[in-house]
Length: 63
Image (cartoon, rainbow, N blue to C red; front, top):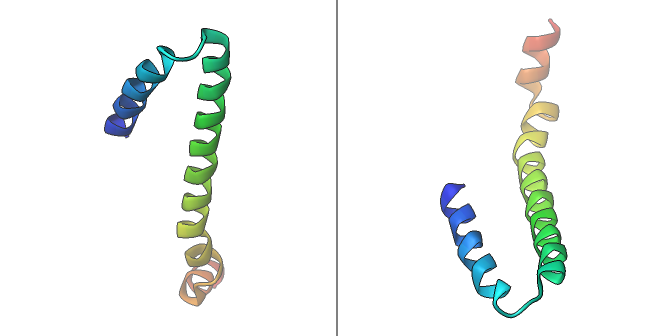
């Protein structure tokens, strides 16, 4: 996560040279929004089936 953050910081600095600050703030917000949505979807995709469709989980927690 730190490596990804640092990579984006470098990317941010490069883009900052070409964009004006206001446009850059919007661009950064949209990027972070997209990253967060992808991360949330990834977490849901990894956890959702094991919690809801694993019969052993259901049996052990409802008996």
